[in-house]
Length: 342
Image 1 (tube, rainbow, N blue to C red):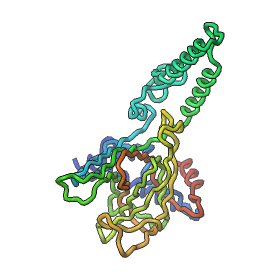
Image 2 (tube, helix red, strand yellow):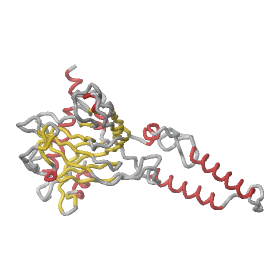
Image 3 (cartoon, rainbow, N blue to C red):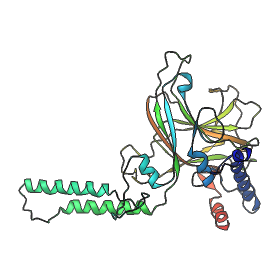
Image 4 (cartoon, rainbow, N blue to C red):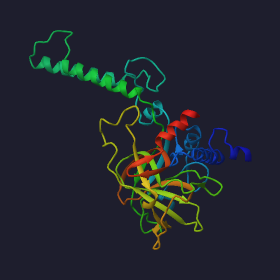
């Protein structure tokens, strides 16, 4: 029983997580010719163990995998959920879309499905265009097709084919709705928040040993103001460092950039440690202690509490500790070399 808790049969688990981070830290420090350490991956859902930890998120204060929480605990009405999406099939199922394949062949739903829903829509538009030409008195022979519609079909085919060739980036989708209404029986004076939290790194956290100065987050944002929570090993258990993501939407709602097979491209955001503020029990401490790289990370998380009612959606693909100077992440080339050796 204890063994299964330490090493879950489905993968993941605290010991595997800690061991992977320790192994990467040691390998990153072995090459003395490299001035700066290569980026340290903390969570990446392309990795089997990280995906296993995220597959079944828990609600409430349980420890272990990823945790989802909202203001239901104080009688509020905001609700959030988290879903691991690892393939085209997962994404289209989550979005309630039929399988699609540009060649129309049968398949397994990961981009090779037999739904052909796009082609049916294109055929319908073509029929409507042809009917308008008939009604408008244009000389039209049976079998003729509108060149504009044909061009549109060919363009969409090429676009979908190009998207299929791009590798799918696994991610967790955190979504829900914020409601700032305070419950009638609640003792709280304000409400309206949702949050997710990563699994913990055991043994007092993962020690960065002053080797990194920032967090890099690969994500897609809807443009709302998200808080990044960084819990480090401290003598004060209520201390929590917080950074902020306040950027325009990665993709505007309804945009053509929202790929029906992947959800669209991700963006990379870098949050320097020196930009984090020290909080306790949800409030900023009067006396600040600047966050540097000499820290031990216990867990990370995200919170949405921007005071605005409405739906939200945030996709998270990867979190890394990095060295960031003058707008450049250092050590990327060395990281690729290390991967090629493994």
